[in-house]
Image 1 (cartoon, rainbow, N blue to C red):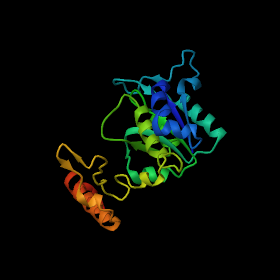
Image 2: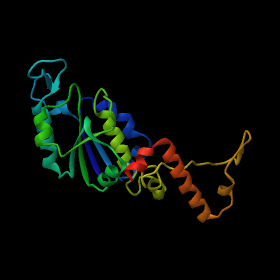
Image 3: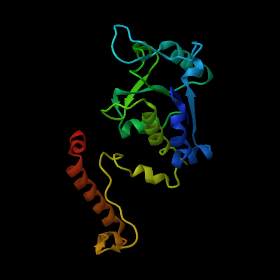
Image 4: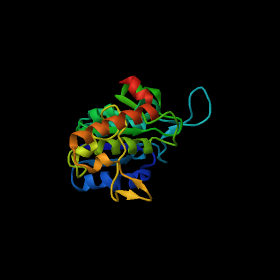
Length: 226
């Protein structure tokens, strides 16, 4: 998979993509992430990429020209399965969406900034709009990092135990059950006895019961959706 990201502040993404699973996956050749500075495509002599909104009002709007030219340039080099705009008013990111997008070959992400991008870009060049939650960030960079991280960990070879990602919360519509490791007893608190017995069928049953209980207690809305 290749992920291209268009950003007004590309240096903000150096850390998230150079460390942990995404960093290791890139070194292993499992995924390629390229972050591009939108100003590279600006025709303004100062590299300006924003302008005042028509109709007045506070804030600035990301202009059409640099974004449109950037998308056109990148699309001339490869085909993209989706051109994704990270925006607070997009569709809420859920695991099913991540699962679907993880099967893509190439993805292009656009990070919003200021008061957002000219609506005509959204109408004519964007194929999917995604939000990571009902709140506003300074820009779409951190949202792009979240989406990319969620995608990469599902790609075969990105993590050592491929089955691990398939047992995460939300993969089956439920929260994951509690997990334990050594020591079996800590400050008087013991690991549930069933996990120490080696009876895998009973352990699987216990984990499902715990997942259901935990989901009902913490996220009953997931059960309603299911």
